[in-house]
Image 1 (spheres, rainbow, N blue to C red):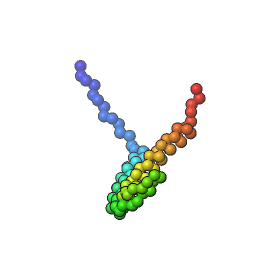
Image 2 (image 1 turned 135 degrees about the horizontal axis):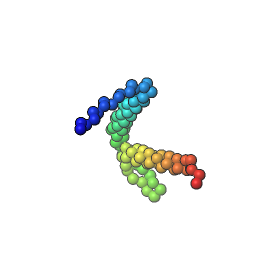
Image 3 (image 1 turned 30 degrees about the horizontal axis):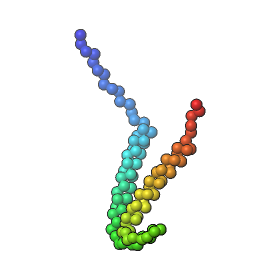
Image 4 (image 1 turned 135 degrees about the vertical axis):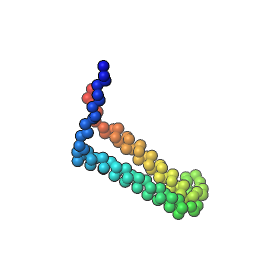
Length: 99
């Protein structure tokens, strides 16, 4: 007995919609890459410009710190608080299925 011959898959023509989706996804990736590179360059320039020491006053005292560390810590804290806030808002406003 001979094995049945495998038929070659029939290739369908790509529709305009599918091609547009494929190209827009690629464009989005390039845009994200450009934004990431611009952000890295901005952070490097920010670090280079803010190296001086400043006085930081607390409730019970004061200290000297580099300005860039205050900027970085404030940025990370704001980013984390933004993520937590969006998570909580999404969790409290999502549609719940009736049981």
